[in-house]
Amino acid sequence: MRLFKQVYLSINFFFALTLLIALFMLGYKLHMLFVVAQILLVAFLLVVAVEVLILWRLKDGVLARRITPERLSNGDANTISIFIRNYYRLKIDLKVIDELPAQFQVRDSVFELSVESGEEQVLNYDLRPTKRGNYEFGAVNVFASILSGLVVRRYQFDQNREVPVFPSFLQMQQFELMAFSQRLTGNGLKKVRRIGQTLEFEQVRDYVVGDDRKKINWKATARRKDLMVNQYQDEKSQPIYCVIDKGRAMKMPFNGLTLLDYAINASLVLSNIALKKDDKAGIICFSNRVTHILPAERKKLQMHSILQTLYDQKTAWQEPDFEKLALTIKTKIRQRSLLLFFTNYESIVSMRRHAQYLAKLAKDHLVVMIVFRNTEVDKLARQKTETLKDIYTQTLAEKMNYEKKLVMRELRKMGIQSIYTAPEALNTNVINKYLELKARGLF
Image (cartoon, rainbow, N blue to C red; front, side, top):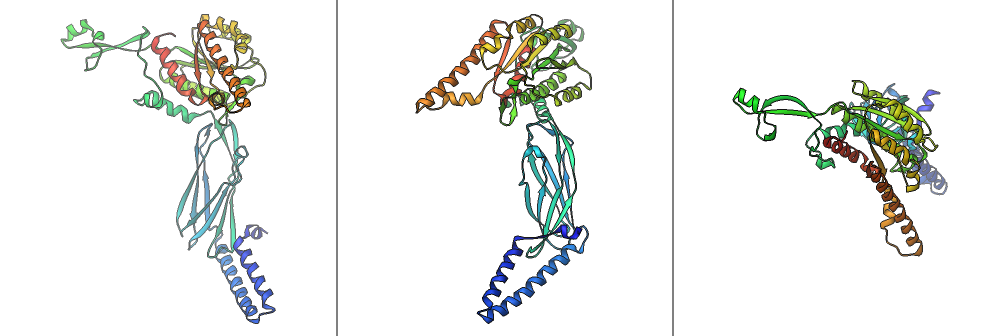
């Protein structure tokens, strides 16, 4: 029974069989065709027998193994590899079908290749998940054929495995390299000149060409009889909280990801950079109640705690309760902190419902609101108008954009800083704002 489950008849088999049947039918009128059909039938059976003998001579003629990362990065291209080895003594043609997780809704992940005897090959393909959670891979199916390919043998490698999809740790690593290298401006990140006084003295060292002469330590220079300068470092241990709204407005999708996913990825990226710059990073998640508070710390396992906290967050359909949030922050967070709010205001009316609570928070903390730019509305506002319907659509789009500007203006009046950004540029703009505020010594 197991043998029959492994046997597959290819399309070539049925083409050849159809041709033979046609020849036998014509052979009733033309004797020569009947003789040719008999010869071809014998040859057909011999080829089938030879292919079956070769394919089933070895118990395991082909080895295939899927290589997956321990975890996948949400919203990024993750490379999956399939290792293949041919143990037959001749070249074989393979069709490889990988059973992908149901979340991708892909049923045509098929690869065709030829593998020489004893050869090893690696197939690589990319998967871009758009939801966090567990993804279950199925089996790796390999269909092997030789010669004319009339008969196909199926190998199935049972590699059922669950792989978790975490917030975008690939973007976290990418932006970490940018933020601490000389490639900042080329990737949209800015170097900001320090204008505040939040520097801590670190040490006195020898003067090198390019040092600021204002930092020369004249007393140390007189003692050493050589130029010495004071070296400073950024003021450390400033608390930074990413405050993530999980209300229904954050369910809005852009390029396959929801605004909540963009906010979570940006929070992970920013928290990592803040910790690398010796600040404290924490997370607050809320909807109609405050669901998670991870206190801002600088301990070794803080990044792991942040990743685990963000992994489980899901969009709730309730209206966010800023009153409960403001009360919780006032009770739990005593030290002045940088609060980056990831929320979505589509109108000035929705923002004004929360204005009094944001104003209270702004008295004790530095509050930065992230306002998402609706790129689809931008396209509608810029489109050419040819019909009355186009004019009506464009007018509504311009009104929606104007509402966003009103939100920004209202926030400025309240002394609250803001970031107006498209979801795709969120990471870059959030990091730039953090570096700017840190350079200005505002927190």
